[in-house]
Each structure stands twice: as C-alpha cells, then as structure tokens.
Picture (cartoon, rainbow, N blue to C red):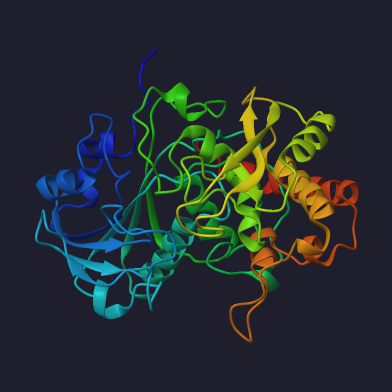
Length: 381
C-alpha cells in the first residue's frame, strides 16, 4: 500500500509562498513528515523560520493537559517559543508583528473538544487582523472523513473546547476545517492549504501507512482517538475518564460503581462495533488519583460500525442511573462560567436531564444531518 503524502511532505511544491518572507510555525510533536523529520527542522532549512508558537502541551509535548505554557527558548533551535496556551490564546500583534507567514502543522483527532482547533482559529483571526498569510500543512483526519456524529454546539456554550457550532465528530481534515472556519464563521484571512496526496475520505489513520505520533499525552493510540469524541464528556463529571492510566478515555469508572452491572447493562444495549468489559483501575493522577476505580473498558470490535458519540452518551446515562446520588456534574470553575459538561456537550440538555437518551440521540441526529450539508462544501479530497 502506498503511503499518503502529508502537507509537509509536499512543501517543496509550495516554496513560492515562503520566498523572501519571515515565517512562524505553530506545531507540536506530531509536526513531522512521513520519514519522521521534524517540521521545525524542515522549515528552518527551507524557509526563513524566525519563531515557534506553542499550543497546549508545548511544541515538544512535554506539558500535561491543562497546564499553562509560558514563553521560552526552544533548546534545539534556539528560537523563541511563544505560548498560545496561557494568558493569551490568540496571538497578539507583539508576537507576530515580525512575520509575513504563520504556518500551522498539528495532527488533530477529529473531535470538536480538541483545543488545537481553536488555537488554529485564533491564529487565523490574528492573521486577518494583522495582514499575515496563514498556511495549513494538511493532515488526515485519523477517524475518517465520512462520518459525522453529535450535536451542533450552541454558541451560548462556546469555549476553548468548542468555539464554533460544529458537531462533536466533524469528518474533515484540519485543512478542510480551516476552510470551513474561514468562510462559515467569517474569519476571512489569507488562507493557503498545502494539500495531502493519496488520502481518501473512507480512510482511518492505519489505512494511511503513516507513523502514528501521540497527538497529546492522553491520546496514546488510534483507539483512544476514536473513543475520545464520545467519552471526553466524562471530564464534566466526577467519574474518571481514565486520565492517569494507560487507557485514557477507554476505561471509565469510579470507586463506587459495580463494574459487572455496568458492563452487562451496556452490552445489553447492543451498540454497534463495541463491547464492554468490567474493568478495575487506579489513576496515578487526575480524578480519584490513588483510588481503585470500578467500571468498564470500551473495546472497539469494528471501527467502521462503532459510533463513539452515541456510545459515550449512552454510557454516561447508564453510569448516572447506577450511581444515583453519588453522580455529580463538576460545578462551574468561576462565578460567570458554566458547567464543564455544558461546554463538553455544547448545551445544557445532558446536565438538565429533561430529555431521555432516545430523545437526545434523535435531536443530535437531526444536527448531524444539518452539519453534513455544510461540511460537504469544504471537501477538497
């Protein structure tokens, strides 16, 4: 099988964009070509790369989820690294004033919750405001480019884990998503996409024959990326989503649950492409750190049939029912803020509990159909 060519693999065909221009790069450890060469090194060699910009986790991936990133000097290149995951998530004039071109090369995971999407969006806004060219080095959507799942985010619940009204699983490459953001949400920057070659919409990441690099510390495998768009909603509850284990987002539980009852109840639902196994785990950090948790491990039996969003929602309903008064939604972090679960789910329906699981799935399926007609306008493959 021939390997898909990444945007960075095709950089030589687009060097005219960078000719006689100063260049900045937003990247992280996933920013490599298909031969494991760093995008940082390649742009330093082929363009006038003058600065790096760090999203969540840092350009080298050495910072844990949620930790603020400060400005620093990159040890390997000596370039300034400016933080886009601290006090300022949108690049200010001061940190991009010396650039002509700002490049984005980060692997996404196909989910609305992923902060890198909005690092990109804010950077696009700054490029529009300060008259810079914005370039996306395109990468495959690891969970495919055909399937859509979930609700369209209500903009009253927008945040850095959901800035725009898109579905939880959006079925676009990062380059296609940039096109959608630029037009649908009226950013209007000078956007250039350095395209993939050989990628087909039906492909999951393993079909690309490309190296899998962890997109962030808690997305170690392809299976994690696939379940993430469903089980990330547990972040908004007092149930562990498996952070602090070797199976984040694949093991879900708490100290008080009955693992066998949860697994049996979930398997009785006969959800497509998935089985649930009773599981016990002790997180080393995050929720219930050091405590034995009881719950389930999600085992994907068919990637093509598996529906992560419906699966995650169904599991949340089941665990809430089993936990009774012990189940809690995490309260807002600030007086003005909303519940984390509302940011996760892009609305208040799940928290308020006024709709049944069946009714909620039906509502979300209507959103999915609406978003499908929007996203197709931005297909470039």
